[in-house]
Amino acid sequence: MRRPKRSTKYDVRCTDKRPSWDDYFLDIASLVSTRSTCLRRKVGAVLVRDKRILASGYNGAPSSIEHCSIAGCVREKLKIPSGERHELCRGLHAEQNAFLQAALHGTSLKDAILYSTIQPCIICAKMIINAGIREIVYRGAYPDKMAMDFLKAAGVKLRIVK
View 1 (tube, one colour):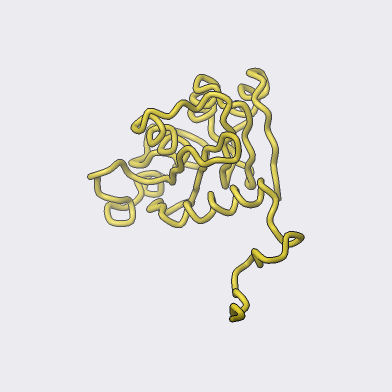
View 2 (cartoon, rainbow, N blue to C red):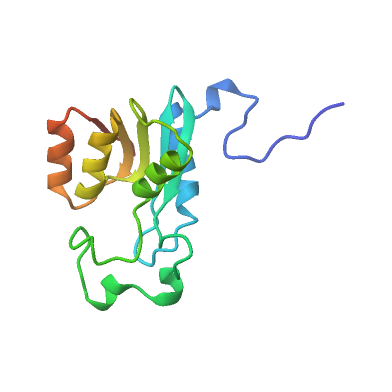
């Protein structure tokens, strides 16, 4: 019996059309970002070690707290530019939620790779350094030079994949 042709983005029967590991995990991070409740930017993060997913996260309000899609965006109301005054936000960043998910389940992030739809901010960069994450692969830039400087100084490998 012949199977019908699959109508997926990647035809799993043709090995030459398989995505690279970077594209695979970045595509998963993009899918994770669709769960975001942020009104400004949808971000997804996936933590990986040895080509295995350890945890994932998306940006949004903490569990049991009203989502920004319902309560509104404090940052929009106060006209706060992107990359500034992170403390004035109801939500957690995607990376932070992924770190917390790993911690909740007792999973070490030492030597993990972070795949993210966007470059981390300075707050997340400091957490990445102290968690022992060795590399960040991301698709989009973010206006935070200090984060990049910290990550480079700490020896965290950075790669942007378009």
